[in-house]
Image (cartoon, rainbow, N blue to C red; front, side, top):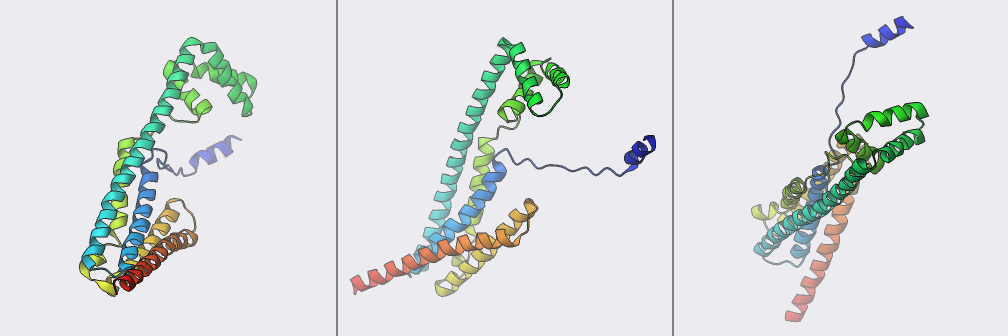
Amino acid sequence: MASDDAAVDQLPHHEHHHRNVQGGAARAAVFGFSDGLVSNVALILGVAGADPAPSVVRLAGLAGLLAGAFSMAAGEYVSMRAQSELLERELELERIEIARRPEHERRELAAIYRSRGVDADVADELAAGMMRTPDMALQTHAREELGIDPDELGSPVKAAVSSFATFGFGALVPLVPWFLAEGATATIASVIVAAVTAMAAGVALARATDRPWLWPAFRQLFIAVVAAGVTFTVGSLVGISADAVSG
């Protein structure tokens, strides 16, 4: 047995680090970039379908970029602020209960450990140890009872900034060709760069989650193509109707 333990101790230890994905900024970044790309390519092609002057398409694209980025940032800030305040309220209630009824909270924590298969005596010992200091007691109850980490409630400001920047970047991608070309050339280039970027975003998401890349890449492409195709068709029909009326 001792030789086995020694052999285990001699095995190389590989450290692994988990990314922080609960703070809100990562989620806002992924959602913001994808939303910016899809919504603005749809807007740009919808306007381009009516065959207006290139300056009109550029103006629509810039307006969509700024309006969407500010809207996303404001929405993320409000939602994250509301979530943080709700969690802080729950933590405050738990802090009050620990101060008022420590024995009740100790028994409650021990019951949680027992429900997870821990021996009753060990569960009581663990619960008593966790309740020795108020801060440790609050941390433990927050994780075990509420399922939250008091130190990782999320930053509304970070989520808003991340969402603004990533939405803006995503929305800029299909707009760039319209500063370099016009007409059908700009439209085709916008479609191509948006499609490639959508697939790249799917691949990046798959790599971040250690999943096969094929389905996420084509899922992102499909969403972008459907949105752009519908709006381009509508824009074309509106443009044809307007021409018929004016004629």
